[in-house]
Amino acid sequence: MKQISDQQSNNVVKPLSPGRRTFVKGIAAMGAGVAAFPLLTTTAEAKALVVDSRFPSESSGAVGALQVPLTFQGDKIDWHGFDRYDFVMDMQNQAITPFKAPAGEESGSLGNSAPGQLRCVVVVPKQSAPGNPWSWRGVYWNHQPQAEVELLKRGFHVAYISVDPKPRAAMELAMDERMDELGMSPRALSEWDAWYAFLTNQYGLSKKPVFVGMSRGGIFEYSWCTANPSKVSGIYADNPAMERPAFQRLRTLARADVPILQVCGTLDPLLGTYASAIEAIYQQFGGRVSMMIKEGYAHHPHSLRNPKPIADFIEQSVQAVRVPAPAFVGDNFVRTAYYSVESFYRDYPDEDTYITCRGPLFSPCYDRYEFSVRGTPTSTAVIVPSTAAAGIPWVYRAGFVFRDAKVDQELLARGFHIVTAPVTTNADGPLVKDWDLAYEYMIGHGFSKKPVIEGAGGGAGEMYAWAIENPDKVSCVYAENPHMRSALAKSQPLDNLAPLAKANVPLLHVCGTLDPWFEDNTLEVEKRYKQLGGKIQVIFKKGVGHTPLAPDDPAPVVDFIVRAAMQS
Figure (cartoon, rainbow, N blue to C red):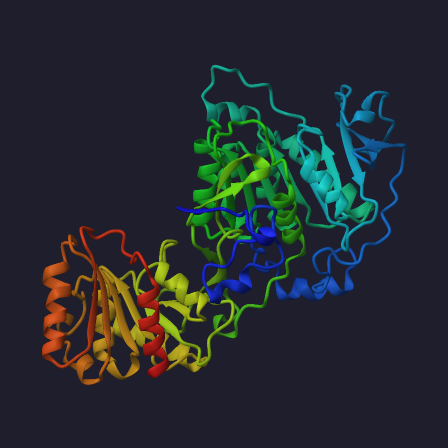
């Protein structure tokens, strides 16, 4: 985990490498150096933004041209310097009518709902941001409201509805059972549906609000959002809990590309059971989830004293517009997010502590596409760089690209595509013909005719086998702790290196000296390849076993690959 102090000029952390500087823009959170979320919406939605004034335009900028605020019915009172309008919902017919707040609520408090009713609130900005964006909180009105006050200053509306909960949980229940009991009833979900329809249809607020949930509020926001993923721009969850049905629906939320920011304390009892579990599951589903974990903090206080990082995340989530999918993925594809989960330990003076930060707010984030190439049995996966390098260089590899793949991450920053070859489920390993088809498909869409061949462990042996069959189609081979065995090769790669040496293909291995394959594979490849007149480099990781696979410093590997790709 990297320790970073942000007490420097302009409070912005510099990008990790020159190729990444385009990712650190748009937001410069106080003491954070937060990078903008990648573009999220589809091309069709982007076109609709231009003609539908309820949504921000592509060129709206950080805030955009503010507009006249919406006019709400009923009496108003002051809430932190902004106009607050109160409503009540009849729980029988879900009719919503203006409500005069009782005396004493000028301070920002909210009294209990009368029997058969739910209190509802809307706070109006001085001027509305384009598209009438809004944040939606359920439970704990006016608790640590600094992020919402900041949003009001940026032209957001702030909305709230109380919740008709399930019966109150017994304290003797286990934590997950208690959260389920405190969660949303089906009737409560329908009441939130009615409040959403009231604000979007009658008053023209954006069709995709951002949600704010603290503690038990996390249960409510995750429950409604996972049930309505197409109606959500983003989720800010603070030391959240979650009920089990919402856990089961996280995949739909990830597929809708809803970004999540979770702010938690290291001592919060819910961190391991809920926030960390949400993070892990959402990552595996390809969703964008960022974490800010406050050192030494427990369940309280919620939020941040300086709410700018939270407000920046929310504003970017609302305004983001996704670039269109590349032509090579065709019409049928699955798009997910790829980013590092490296943690950064950052000094936040305003919070009087360090915060562990990770996720796509703090590391570059890329689109990963899965699609079918005609004639292959399973999908091909491609991680797309922000900007492709000249000649469209690419890595052709075997095996899933995990989030600790340092070399691939640096190559993405340099403009390389990362392509994972298809592997059949009906044989003991990949078939050369399938990889041939995928290769021809990629170069048919303008990719370089000589990709970088890459693999780790057993995947390296399979990629070596393909490279040996196609030495004129390889710029170089890079392997991490390789096992030089191929399930379906005509002859094993270790015994058939001559075609690569004859084609002058350079090799690079990164290996732990305690890896079980080290002596019989890497050292043997090095000896034989040199005897054949080939060029090979080996980077030794002394005292390291098979894992971790990546080199401690990816720079020499990346330089080797870039040089070989440029010369091919």
